[in-house]
Length: 333
Image 1 (tube, one colour):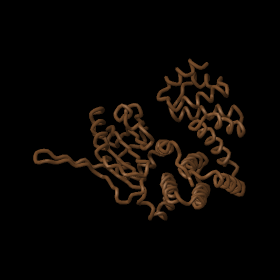
Image 2 (image 1 turned 90 degrees about the vertical axis):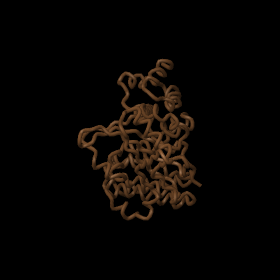
Image 3 (image 1 turned 180 degrees about the vertical axis):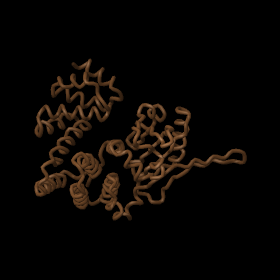
Image 4 (image 1 turned 90 degrees about the horizontal axis):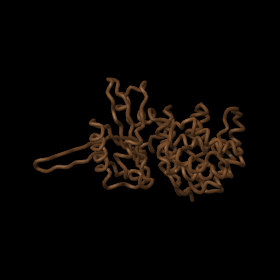
């Protein structure tokens, strides 16, 4: 049977950052219509960690605090909460209110609070928090979408050109096939074939492929069958720019190595791409975690040996800022 990834929220955070406008447009069109998308939005990771340090505990949440600009010119803070695990939370609405109040206290402005629920309980639908007594009353409402509701709207998802529909489809198929690995393999192949057939560009295919591959984990035997069948499919399609099997297989080997013990992942990467490729991927993982890296730090990473890359791969999971990487390099070079 399939097993859960050890870091379930990571693909959600990545995909939301890569397709932020598409996600808001798809799930919350009224809010999206108010935003000036010509102005760049900003993910406020450090600010959110200060506001909600408890959100870093465990792997249950994939929260994002984002600063956007309205068409009228004002700044707006969006709190996007993704409930990743399929378990209802009794105090969910209260926590949404607490975060909202902390954001107001920090920025002196009310945020737009939005929740994306990934659980499988059709009855759990938190939309507001209410408190009242004879002299004081408070009702706090927030936007909420439930991915489960799209299960009966599959044709609508297939016809929608928004790339975030692929994310929803992958999640639903992963949910439906928890106890049927063979069906999951076929569903996974079908979703990835659809990426090619819909004419997505290579960058889009790789991004969405990575998410599908992460959430639709397969047992080892079926995993091998999946990669073999996909490679045959790609070869039959004769798409010269598609190298997703080799590229993503290599990347995932390294990424899994970082989480489960970097040595094995590095060895898999070396077998498929040599030391230079392994170093390149470590840089991409660092850029994903820390955003843009200074050229000075990238140049130092280029000097690392495989052994040092292994150590860096284990350490980078604890990095929060580029200063953490700088300190590590000073101690290890």
